[in-house]
Length: 166
Image 1: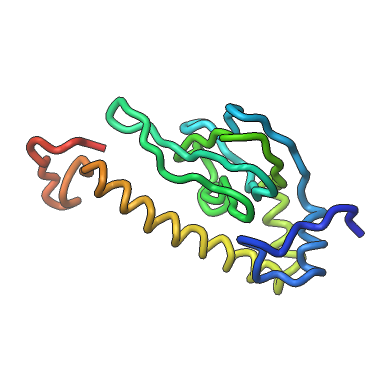
Image 2 (image 1 turned 90 degrees about the vertical axis):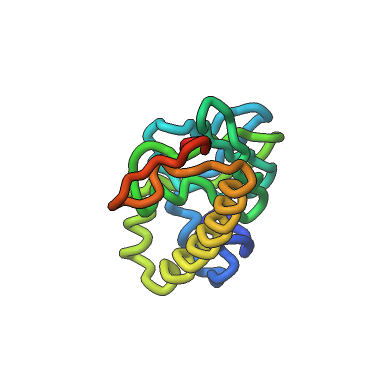
């Protein structure tokens, strides 16, 4: 039995006690300090993080400027894109204040998915809920900052005159 059991909050809201207890054993707790860069855009990212305490700013660099995408807190996850598409991080995550995170490597997550089918469904449902919320927020940021893709259509590849390019 794990000494610490992940709380039933955020992405873990759909998981029962036994599932969260088992999931806890697949990862580790870590403390963070204000200003600490947890994930750096463009760097390889292989961890899924769960925020236990504290807040974290998510930013991306576009057209020579930093764009604030989100502020995440207790129950939110970070690095979830690496679960589905391993590789370079799509954004930078910086600790806004001291906090605590639980994290697991992607290969440990894959093992959990194999070992605990029922709990895995609940975990993936929780992650998908967060991803859906973030996609909606990202669309709002794109509109608010008038960020235009490099082309309007894959077929036409027409550039938008006078628009800021992503």
